[in-house]
Length: 93
Image 1 (spheres, rainbow, N blue to C red):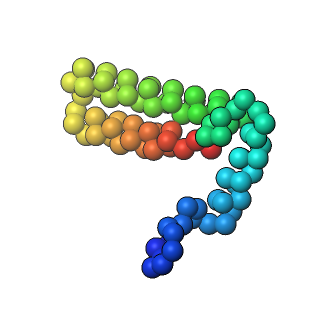
Image 2 (cartoon, rainbow, N blue to C red; image 1 turned 180 degrees about the vertical axis):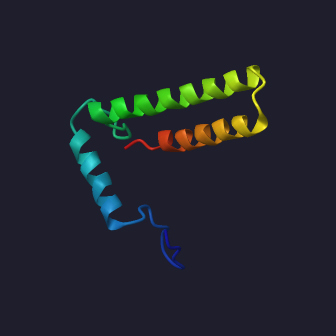
Image 3 (cartoon, one colour; image 1 turned 60 degrees about the horizontal axis):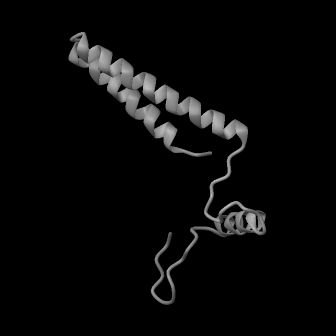
């Protein structure tokens, strides 16, 4: 977000982000869903669960390699894979 010299600090980085926030607020208005809730489709939730599972499997691979005394380059490679999978798992949508 660009910093401005005067006035209030911007709340949204772009007009489209502001529009999505407005749409989200209006969709939950009058329902029991909290305004700050994150709503995912079943496909998005399933994809997130899959990404978390991949991270767990990669972490188990690192632990197994260390326990078996694998070479440093192999452990480094497994750690790099783990970090990449963790970055991918951070995204919600």
